[in-house]
Structures are given as structure tokens and as C-alpha cells.
Length: 478
Image 1 (spheres, rainbow, N blue to C red):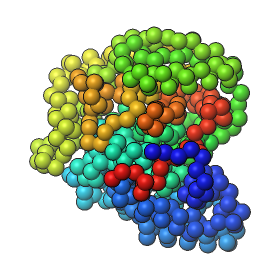
Image 2 (image 1 turned 90 degrees about the horizontal axis):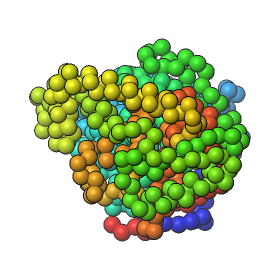
Image 3 (image 1 turned 90 degrees about the vertical axis):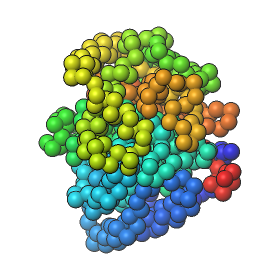
């Protein structure tokens, strides 16, 4: 149940760029933009459960302040008056900071995270904190604190995780853009399931501070309905910050300018399975058709079977879940019943890993990174499905047919590039016969975001998707 090119002209479906332009031209006020966002949020939230906290009073104060600054002739930031949400793994000073967990339900952030500081400096209005699976530990949108965040394309399905609420709310037209995180695919997974464009830039391109539980895997990421909105948001978020030990000192690329580049000289690899994944036949066929568009652009496309050798799932799992488990050690001892039982079990297993075995996994990570580096000496970009499936029923942690995989390793395609740290994105590839979105993953060589945005913008021009929208909530079965 979805609509193509709907006649609805609601302001909720404006791009972030258009909203910023209208506000700068005094054709729309920050208060009006916020009112439209809050009205849409109230309509969709009972079905989607995409927000854990709505910051309505603070947002209204910010909108009034921004309007006053504009009236006084102050210079406008790139997102002046644009509404945005922030995932609840990222600190917003004075707001609840719950990590999707009942164990953290009373926690309040004392200060803004680095990314939130940059949003405020750019004039963005933060409307709320979006839902996440508990501590980002699942690839679906379930949390003991908020329940199941639903997919606007089919509310019987999960929005994906762990940036569940970010994706669901953007796909439903609450805001045009949102900020999430990605430690193993957490922006790309829900982007694929919700028909959005989400990007994990180079590790350290966007500072992560306060330091994450998994500092060598975690990224703060933008998600949106079109490529240039995401480029704009990533430009705001990017830049060196000494508080993040992995922060990149070199100047970030001009992502918006990269969207205008000709991608025809790029060498692209296409791998349907990475040598170990088992995508659903319909997913594989939809992504393979999308890949043909890259050849139509004039790119050189070569199919490759197994780009990096064996599946690195156990390497990623050892590092990610041990990092989260270390942060949760006290909770596991004193209040385990407050945790999602599946999350508690998997982090306990990671903490029980002998030190020798853990360090062997670390050594294998560096071997894997070197194989990836050598592969990208031959290619500028790698294409694959983002996920092996097109949809996952709400309440299901691991889809049927993927038994033996853990809470994240079932996704198969995304976590390798948290191990390498290189840029990776999910872009809409098409829709299944049932009307569910399917994602295409685009991976760039290290520090290659400009190539990623060049090819993503060209693909969007050939195969636009942003005008296709979910059916209204009230038209979907309850």
C-alpha cells in the first residue's frame, strides 16, 4: 500500500534545502516550519513509535530565537530553521539520554554531543530524540523502553535498526533529515528498509564525542530522503574535533559540489554475495537491475565474487559486543532484568571470550582491513545489496532463513565496512512486488566520499525515488 507521485503538497515533504531557502527568503518562518513538523509527528507517532522524547518546548524556544536573530539581520546558518531529530545514542544537553534502555530511563545528558553542537551552530531546530534498539545492539527497531518502531511503508514491519526512529520519522515526513549512528550498519540498515539515503562517512570525519562504547567502529551519520539533503547535513556535521581521538584533521570534501561531478571515469565493482551472503532472489534481482544504471552512466562495472575472502562477522561481533558489554558490566551484575534478554545474552558471551581469543580477533581485523585496502587499489567503488532481505516483521530479531546469525550478523553486507572505517551508504534500489523498499550499498575507498556522492547523485537523477511515499497511516491496516 503505497503511492507514486502523490498529489499531497504538505510542507512535511519539502526537502531540507527548500525549507532553508524559504526561511532565508522570509517566505516561511522557523515557527511555521516547526509547527508543520510537530503536526506531522502527532499524526504518525501513534503508529510508528519513532520518538522516545519530543522536545517541543525547547524547539519552540529555539524557533522563536532563530526568527528574532533573522529579523535582526544576523547571518544565517546552513540549516537555519530546519527541523531535525537526533538518535538517542547521541547526547542532547538537558534532554533524556536513555540509549533505548530501561536501565537508563532516568538518565539526562549534561551537555551536547559534538554533532549536536554543530547542528545548533548551523541553526537547526532539534525536535526530539529518536528511538534505537537497546545500546544499538540489534539490527531491528525493538527496544524494551519504547517497544517496536514500525516501518512507514508497512507498519507490520520493523523500521530496522539501530537508527530506527531516525529512518521511520524521515520516511514518514516528520523531518526531511535526521542524525543517527552506525557501528555495524545502523544507518544503512534502516535506510534500506525505509527507502532512504543514509551515509556512514570515513571514520572520524564526523566527530564522536562523548566517546562511544565502540570507538573504532562507531560513526555519527546523516539520513534523508534525497542525496543533496544528506550532503548538506554531512557538511554541517563534518570537521576536526580534538576531543575525538579518531577525528580526521584534513578538510572534508565539499559533498554538495561532489554531487555535480561527472562519475563516468569511476571503476566500480559489483558483488551480489561477497562470497558468503544469501540474498533473497527478489532482492538480488532488484539490486542487479539497479547496478545496470551505473553502467548506463558510463562507469566501468565489473562483477566480483568474493572481494575480501571470508565473512568477518565473528571479528566484528567480538569487538562490538565486548565494547558494549564493558559499558554494561555493572548493569549486567545488578539489574540484568532491565535489559533486553537477547542483548544481555550476547554481550555476556562477548565478555566471556578469553583474552587470547579476543586479541586474535583484533589481529584478524587488521588482516581484513589490508585485504580491503588492496581490493580498493583496483576499484573506486563497490556495489552490493544493503541487506539480504527486503523486510522484517516487527518483533523479529533475526529473519527466518538466517538462523545461526546473531542480532546484527544476519545483515551480512554492512559490518565489514565498520571494520575498515571507509565510507559506505545505502541508496534506494527499487521496490518489491509487495511495495517494500530495497537498498543498494555503495562503498567507497578510504576518504572517498566525493566519489560516493558523485555516483549517488547521478544514480538519483537516473532513478529518482523521493516522490514515492508511503500510504497515509490511516490507510494502512492496524
